[in-house]
Length: 489
Image (tube, rainbow, N blue to C red; front, side):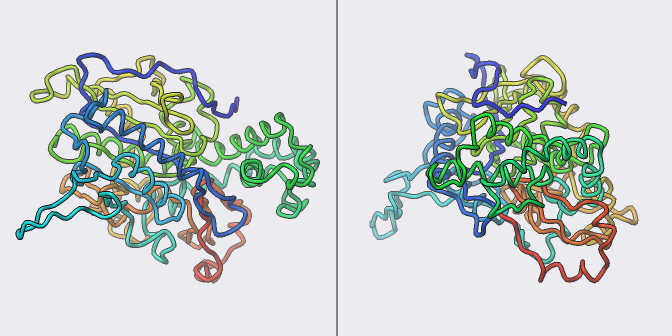
C-alpha cells in the first residue's frame, strides 16, 4: 500500500459555488491546532495553534456565515449567532475544547453594539469584551476521564468498542506490521541521539512511529535547531520518512478494508453527518451548521470507509494541525419549495488551516467521479458503513455491557452514538448529549470483558498488542482508574 503524507494543497477541483446554487446546510469536522508534544504532560494548545484555528474559523465565516458570503447558508444569522442554528461539539480535552472555542471566535467574532440590549428603564447594556459571543461547545457530562466513559460509543477508533479494539490490535500481529518493524529498525536506532532522552533504544522502533514523529515534529516547530540534540540528523528527507512511517502506522490502526469495524469512529461520524444534514434539510428553521472537533485518527477511519484514497493517495497521510473537511448541502432549486431530488451533497477537504491561499477543495468519494452527489445517492453510500444509534453500535461492537445491556435482549436503546449541539429527537436519528462531548477524544479506556486500559490519544491511535491483552486479568482491569490517565491530543 502506498503511503504519501498529505500535501498543503491536494490536487482537487477548485472551490466555487455555481451562480444559482443555494447552500442549505453544512457539516464541518476539524482537527485541533498546533500543540505541545504528547510525550510530556500537560499537553496544551499553543499560540500558533490558536491562530491556526482562529484563521480557519474566519475563513469558514467568510464562506458560509457573513452577510456577503459567496456560499452563505440559507437563512443563517450573519453577525449575532442564533444558537438554534449552530451545533458545536468537542471532547472534554484542553486542546480540542480550546481549539473549538477559538474557532468559534473566528466564525462569530465579537458583535459590538449589534449585541447590545435595551432594558425596561431605557438603559442600553453592551456585552463585555466588545460583544463577545458565548457559544457553547457541547461536551458529555461523563467527561473523557470519567470512570463511566467506557459506556459510551465514542466517535473515535476503538473507543470502548471491543470488536474495533480487537481489530486494531491484530495490526500488530500482521505481516505488514512485522515486516515494517524489521525494515525500519536501523532507521530509528540511528536517530537515537535526537530523542534517546525520551525514547530509549528499546522504544525507538516502528511500534512507536507516531509518538516519535510527534516528538520530533513539535521540536522542529518550537525549539531552536541548536537546542535539538544531533539536529544535523534531521534532514528534510529524514523528517519526511518519519511522517510517512507514522502515517502508515496510524492508517494500519485506523482502517482495514477487510475489517470495517476497525474504523468504528468513521462509521459513527458518518452516521452523525447524515443525521445532521438531514436535519438541515427537513427542518430548515433549526440547525444549519454543525462543527465537530476530533482526531486525525477519525479522519483516517472516515477516509478509508468513504474510499477517499481513490481520489488521491495523499488521503493515506496524517492530516496537519487545523485540517478540516466539510459537507455542503446544496440545491439549484428554490429553497422554499424543494424535494430531496433537488438536493446534492459536496465534500471539501483542506490539509492545514483553511485560507484564501489554501482553500478546501472538492473531492469525489465512494469510488465515484462526481464531486456533488444527489442526496439519495449520498445517503445510500454513507449508510453502507454508518452507525446511526447506540443499538447499532452495540451490535457492531459486540458489546453487551453498560448502555448496551438493554440491547442484548433485542430491545432498542434510545440514546444515539454521538452528537453535537445537545439536541435529540424522538426519531431514529436523534442525538444524545450523554454521548456528545466525547466526540474526537482518544482517552484512557477501561476495556470491556476483562481487558486492561488501552491508552488512546486524540492525536493518535494507540492500542495494546493482543498477546499483551491475553495476559491481563480482571484485577488489572478493575484498577485502571488508579493506574492510568487521559492522554491529551
